[in-house]
Length: 340
Image (cartoon, rainbow, N blue to C red; front, side, top):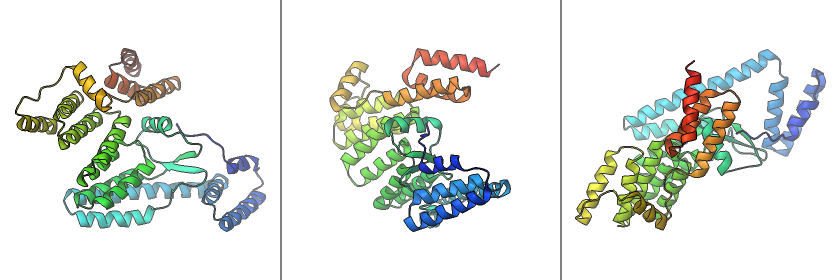
């Protein structure tokens, strides 16, 4: 969850009293010092203090402006996405570049703080386990990952893999555990015939996947990799295993292709044989244990805090991905409680 590390400016804020004139003089002095030092962290801390100490009406206006910024950003981004869906790729990229110019750099990392944007609390919990940090973590008020993911996807569609990879890496800076972004990076690597990069990105995506469709896609990606290197036994196992998480016409087509290449049925191997095949290649069998543990721990904390809806979602992830009996019992109990 969000890091609770206190900064120097937080401590200074605690020392401030109701003496408005003195407080404003202090803030003005800190603002001048920040400008002279060029410290982004200090300028941001001063801004937060100004918001804390501002008159209620002024604070409401500032918060409203941030809300309007977020709403306007969402509307413009959706317009660009719709333009891309109509195959007007250059127009979409122009719109995305204009949108990026408005928000780029507003929430870059500084000496004390790093900004993220997660789709849900579980992704934040997964990130906490995977990438612990001493810096304060704050939520960016706008969806940078979706902006840069869209930009990367459109660049890839327009056959600009270098630009696509640069945009997707920016998306990861704000959400480093997003499986969909990592899978798109794998797509870029495959376009460039970078098999090592393709395998690395797919393995990372598999590590952070907590949805069945993402797991299925990762195993399909692995199947595609082993088709490319003509390891059809491993590819067959990967495609069949992907189907245990999500039905896919793509996986079925690839299995037919393997049959045409090997001239024998591409049957699903028994589970123990599949495990041996995967173990020999270093391929994980099923969801990542750390990701499941992050979901379980968050579920317990949420339940203890009375957030039963979040607890239900997280226990459901553990149950559906790991067939965990304890998680299933917790799901049933929470469903009964929420149904009261």
